[in-house]
Image (tube, rainbow over all chains, first blue to last red; front, side):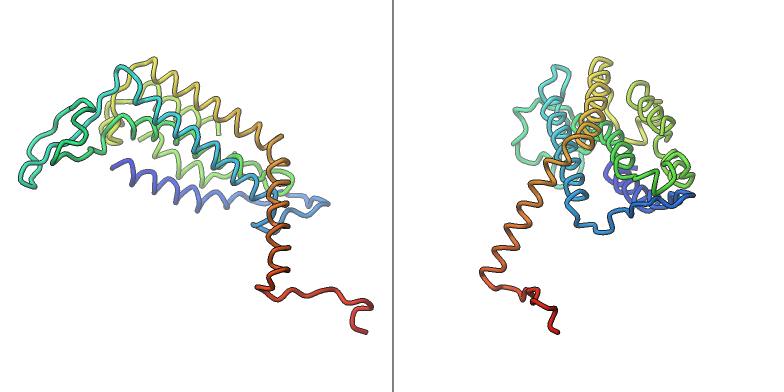
Length: 150
Length: 90
């Protein structure tokens, strides 16, 4: 399963299961924010996007500066996939080359974003006093576990 | 939550060979993996700190922008805006 497909599936299943957290048994005296476009909700979303984006951008640049970093390219000859090679960055613009999905950038971004998925799900899970804790959402745990243990 | 985080840490620090192949991950030095773990921890800290202290400032800015846009709309007359009438039209 490629990383892009896996990311897409994790996102979809997070989205579809995160809302299944049950309501809190007692009603709280203050009502929750009803509008999705309220200032508080927007501020939270924008802030989390900026933080996650900054971290991912930093990791992308960071991994490229490591001495163990190798740029991985697939070589194409006559439009047919002929062989797989590891090439240094100066060959980046060589004609007939194409970036391979299995590379350090993807690996680093996948590993860091697997934490970010959980973190963002936790941040946007309101929890008490309006909903039960995220821990009680069995569907979410069941759905996400197979991917992380895969 | 702890279970999910634990599994992510396992995948980061000691991924099984089968998982590496299935997820098409590259093998990284242990130092690099620890750095990623540290960055993930920084990310958690930043996100929680933002939720605690940063949202108020950002929501103030958003409110200011929304108000400015509303005033602009009023002035340019792009959209019908209804004004409260004294006595409530009685």
